[in-house]
Length: 213
Length: 224
Image (cartoon, rainbow over all chains, first blue to last red; front, side, top):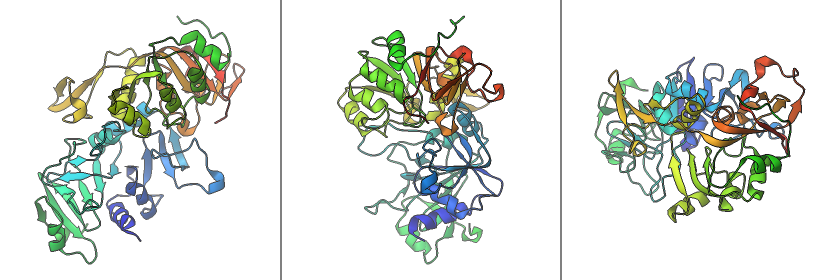
């Protein structure tokens, strides 16, 4: 299991049987590998509830894709719908959880994941609606940027996606739960120490490892 | 009341009859999936320019609306995700195109509201973010919402799977996306379809767009 798969695996463990779940582009899509496909129903904002695994190469339908434009399949019981209906599901609170990537998370759990530094802001997609409407928001990301800078910061330097905080932040080092106004370290990845997390995190956080999630 | 559908026309005829310089167009598709590519090619071959394009994306470089953009026909774009076409970013940085970015759910609901005759709506999405700038904020039951105006167009170019001769439309899988709502929100609607069947041959339970929304039918050069 590589680093991204390990993050996705720990995020998958936060999903509860029976949930409707939307997955963002990138690492979040790996979550499907670590859930019981009969227990979790995946929604994609381009208009499919009941997303199934990628098809074999000879069975790709270019008109059956997820929001990352990757070919997918439909599960028994699946339905197709237009974009306004899809966002009624999302904004209306009918989706139990969304798993999204992020560029930064602040110490209140607020997320920046739509505007890339140094480029004009020309793409937001469904990120703001998903942050606003999903019952639970689970962020999956590497703990630091490629140059080692913290991504769990006191205050986001990048534009926020929503004032609504995430509920969970899962990195290759650890899991934070967002409780009240702050981050709580609830689990460490195998072989990782609390001191290592502290040295690579800018934000303040409480520690409650007994939760173990 | 709308005129009854004249029948099936060629893509170039439909574009010539409906589009003019400076118009606002809605174009269906999530990227190239469910985009009316035959109609877009006819638009690209037409002389019309200075267009405002309401579409989730502007295609990919040189493909679909990406070609329309390369031809310099798009003055303004309204959508949610233009990052899929890096050429749009470059043109925007040089001031060659005006871009209005909306969260995808706000974008789709604004089209729905436009088609449904509403004056706008309040959404919690985007409150407190850069995309809230200049928008009225109002609280309902202690929660903040942003006012979003509706979107409407002069002409909508939509893609469906099948039509009957009255203009009833049936969609196909995730090629549906923005097409049904755009079909409600324009003064004139041109639908590109794989096949036109006789009246009565479509199951009324499966019709995604009732015929009263549709003005022209064009048969697609490539099937879904």
